Image (cartoon, rainbow, N blue to C red; front, side):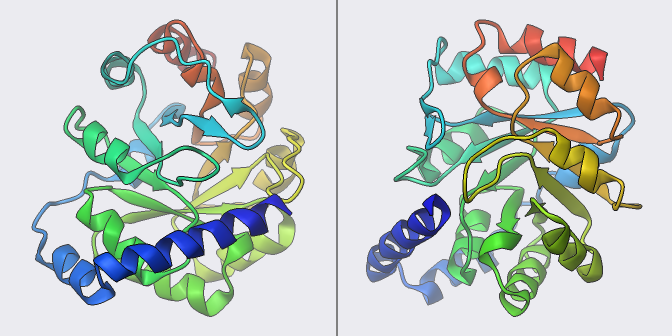
Length: 257
């Protein structure tokens, strides 16, 4: 399965990285940071539909993005139209990099979420060091003990956590943990098939939690469908990455939502 392959590749990269920067050194760097994170939670919780604009070079399901504008212009557009930014830092399958996130940090005051396949404390400390404001934790790749350890560590460091699920079992786990932000991924990470009905089905189970719908938004009609599920925010990647004018598209979709 593609998810297993991604995690396997990430483990290999981490083993190499730790040879150059140890866990202890990464932890020291994180703990000495006095930067106050921008609230990812507040950006999504406010009234109206929030949009998380993503920056990614590629994805396993889509291939290389047909990116029509450069990074500077893209972030200028995002600054004027979206509420938060998602940056892929996974190298092998999404062509991401922590360097992209560090670049984007210098261009925006919006909250930035590090979107990656995170399963170690090292990666959480690194997110703090590179000045992310939030991290993604994917329920499908974490057992309960590991999830709780990484979730608690993130909040100790002042980072928010987007907790990603794609079925009832994973969602119930997150509800039992009392998490603050739940992301429903419409893309099955094992088959990479997309179904917007996933949000519709699972959203009814979520109460008093910031709710994000992830993946699969390509058209105005998709916004209308997801609006019926009363989501607080949409995380949108491919459509905004390949748009001629991501600012205009994001503003139109926020109006529809």
